Length: 103
Image (cartoon, rainbow, N blue to C red; front, top):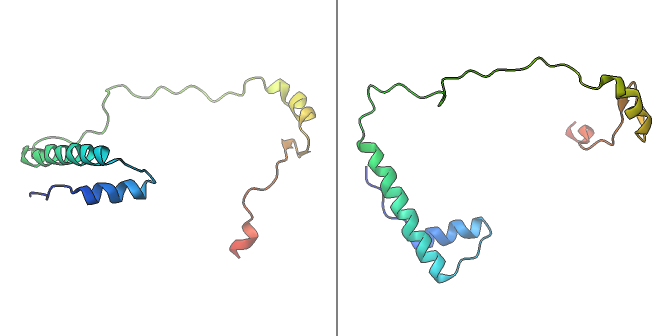
């Protein structure tokens, strides 16, 4: 499958969507570079991957997780005493999302 070369108009359109302003020189440079990248990616279609297993992890190591243990839990009361407002052992903060509008 051959893809048409990327056009300068397309590069300028994508730049405008990203709220970027390009000089004429930059637009030409990015058009050339993106076209080269697309051509290189097209070359991957020619690689035979029929007997290649999908990669799920780049390293053979497994994640080693530590036990979830509260640290400095004895300082909870001191922290709550410094908070402007608390409720039921927690720091009370203003609501950010008003769920009443969803109804």
